Length: 420
Image 1: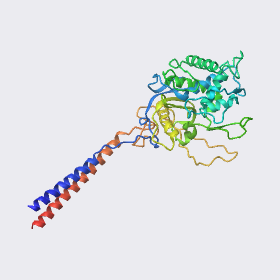
Image 2 (image 1 turned 180 degrees about the vertical axis):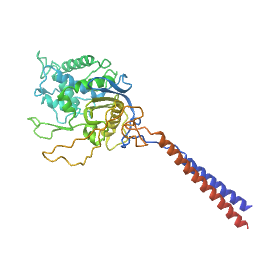
Image 3 (image 1 turned 90 degrees about the vertical axis):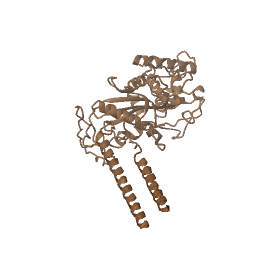
Image 4 (image 1 turned 120 degrees about the vertical axis):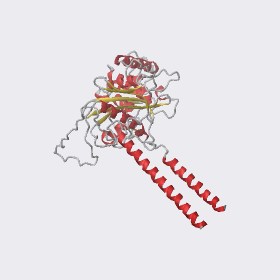
């Protein structure tokens, strides 16, 4: 009787162990979608609204919720910069006066220039750099107040009214947006602060159009491409390091070579932005190998899980969207870049590289069709890998069944020997 109980106990133990193993083996396996170089792929990223356009033609290439009105945070400063450089009084060397109101913020963590004081004077060109590179909110106000027409550098009627002057500047921002065709946009301030009633907004499509117009100006394009900037020392701030600025756009910080773009030879801009209403935003742009300038306005970005590099975590979804847009436009593939390749010696011309062309027939995989696992740019897992994965899973399950059967036979024979 005890032998039968022991045998039954053995059998139930083996069955439970087998069920546990099989359950683990049959659990769904998450496929991490990456392109063939290992970067996050288009199908993996999560962005609430985006729009990619050709900066020269305005043609829309790729979009998601492009006309949904949303707060857009500091990407507003692209329009602030555009209105500034188009002002009839614009002069890079014109001195702008900092008002007391420009320095007052309800949020103590608001981005600003440290050490800036009321009455300080800064060159217009330096303010443009602080606006676009460091995203300084106090400088957005300084620019709007001094170029609004009623305070500081441009005040023909001697009104000396920074509040009214800023309001006049914002009116011009909205008029200019309408002229561009950004008809679903309304700005209430030059920095991009949220409004409680949601009255400060734009759309991904409008934001892309605004960025394309702004990047036509060489000075804006130059400033947007800077990794760092340093405000020069002056009488009020004699230290050389008083105004060191760092770009927050990881596309610019890391560049197309480091990020292994398959289609872009250079990232050119443009601007980041973050507020509670807007979430994480980034307007990215780049020059393709065939010299097309593409702009992607992305709003409500879900950053990747890269806590040590948060700027890169925000930029990689935009990289993926730009790559997909370039692929859809049949942009030629660029050759791989070796970051450690020796530089050409002085007087030596760099070797010419042959650009790989991409066929336009259906079924072309963008130059990596020999790779059975991925398609270029789209990051899609091909059917063959799913078949191989299924066969592998069946093989594992079969091996487990064979092992369990052998174990049961061994236990049966062992019990038989004990009875004998």
